[in-house]
Length: 206
Image: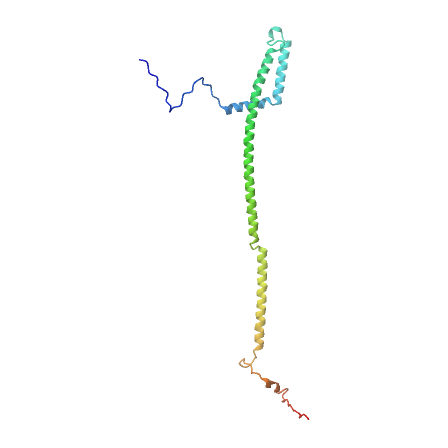
């Protein structure tokens, strides 16, 4: 009996059809292409290529006819140079694209860092302004010195006043007695002056 063909299942991915091409690492190929493009963009490559072409011309012109592998018109040399140019252009473009990608990533990183630095600068500016406003309300060292000097002067002045008051009180207290002064009245003016009573005489008015 012929084997029955199973219908395709919808819950499973379909197997890829066609020819499977070999896979390669694009990063390694990119590095290789950059190396070739970097080598072709140097003065050494131009000098060496000029020497090779000159030797090619001399050999295929002056050498015996049976030893010339590319006689005049130099068809094979033209083919080699065309092949070189056809490969060099894509390799150079690939290297330029990779360099452009690196430049774009570097530019984005620089932009991100510039944005972060701007944000940090604005934050520090706000903090400095806040500190400046706060420092306006904080007592500085010079202010404290001036206030302490003023308080010291006030204390000295208060001490001198207290000493003057104590001196005045001591001067008011008599040296003998119980410290009580005898009350005085209007008759104190009639006391003895210089040890003799003062006599007041009233003459009759006529």
